[in-house]
Length: 77
Image 1: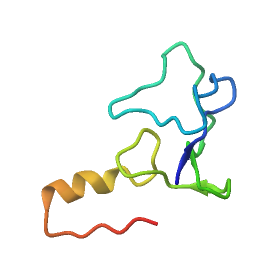
Image 2: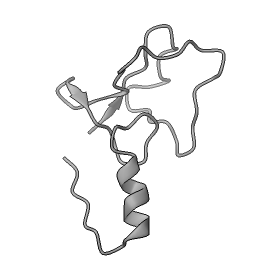
Image 3: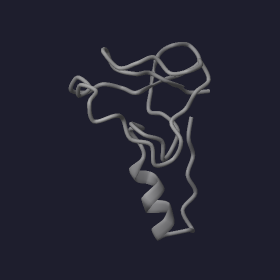
């Protein structure tokens, strides 16, 4: 399970299980995230790459690759 990790000075998510819906973007009035900020943590609270295709996920680009070549099999931990 991945948990969304908002940067400092962003509002807290409405619940602990909240995930940004597809296409979600932060409010432009919010400050930029610090350089290299990880938007996701795993169930142990450690930094995570995040769910594929989610806002701020490190591996979001793999989703685009899969749509180009459906023969690819994606594994995500």
